Image (cartoon, rainbow, N blue to C red; front, side, top):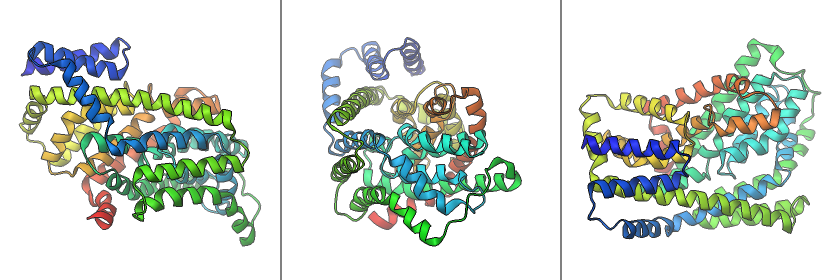
Length: 432
């Protein structure tokens, strides 16, 4: 069996090093493994069957709609509305407007399932605005990098939909499971900003002019369209009025109305957004086909069972298993993007953690957070590249700025391992 395992990792490394698309690399790896060790199996028939089974999932229908919604919102003035609506409320709290980025990303993440889109949309206004007001560049860039990843954790999340389909778990329960951890992680970021600015007041700009309660309430009207969108998407799902797919359709409709109302959306921009969404969906679909085929192949060859038995033979505690997996995923994040990490490792790691007694829903949230870490881990971390385009600073400088938020997120994963009830509380309350 060790020969099969070495062949698996060798083929994967060969395809990745060769620059092959991840989806094709996964299909190629699975096909070659079958030809090498189970030559009598009908490879083409198996690929066709897995492709149909994967892409015909009803829950997967929500994915292209949420991606389209994010593309449309990127074309609106949502980022300006977040800045103007939140700033009057934060001028006198510790950290002042440094919290705008975290709160803006948290709110925007609740209608956008993409980490990169959240970072780009919120950051294109808040980053330059805060730096121009005298806020420390490293604090601004670090908070944007960390909070931008919340686009994956706070529902709706494209990564959660993909995990739910592959792991055969309820997408609604995954969405519910991400709410409390997402809010707590956002509060952790804000706590760091408050403490850091209290210890070093020079990191934040001068206090803005005082605003009356009436002015603060008037500023909230800028958040109105976004709050309506959140209510339509999240409220309809948790209220039992809509499935994730139906809620995504509502989100697309409302986002179009917002764009038209702000006069930032026309037919040409809408078609461009649809084209970009179709390209992203095609890429994700190919990756999922490859992952499903490889997962089936590994099952036929008995690789997940073999690896699980070997690791269980090490005699590690359940917590140490999570620590080892966390380190493993952090290392993978230096050379791979998040979606590829999940689809390549899920067939092996999911049986390990379920055998250790962890719930698959909990593991889904664990994977989402380690994918967040991959988004801010050099050299592949995509959020770092997005911030570089926004600020013009070097990747090395942005990485140094991101380190505190990277360590906060890593520590938060370990807290979830010790207190898994943080993840399971809301799903148990709503659905069990």
